[in-house]
Length: 66
Image 1: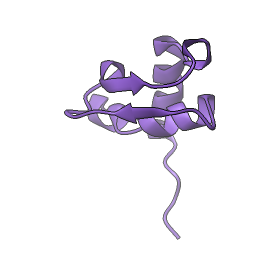
Image 2: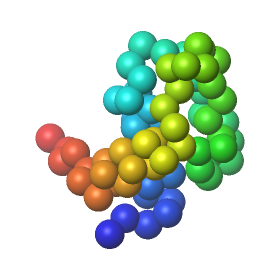
Image 3: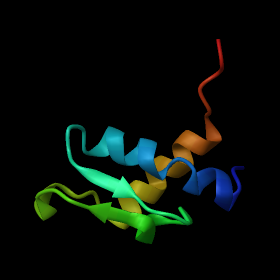
């Protein structure tokens, strides 16, 4: 089970997967979805729930380092 910090560290990756090609920035302190600054069409922004589910999935299944 991933920690909150591990999940928060995956929010950017989750956003990239859910909304590829969009423009956004993840502001400091980087401690949750609220730090995501959307700079694109609001209709393309993934919901907080969808983003957190994807971030949790990524945190629980880290990509192995080569």
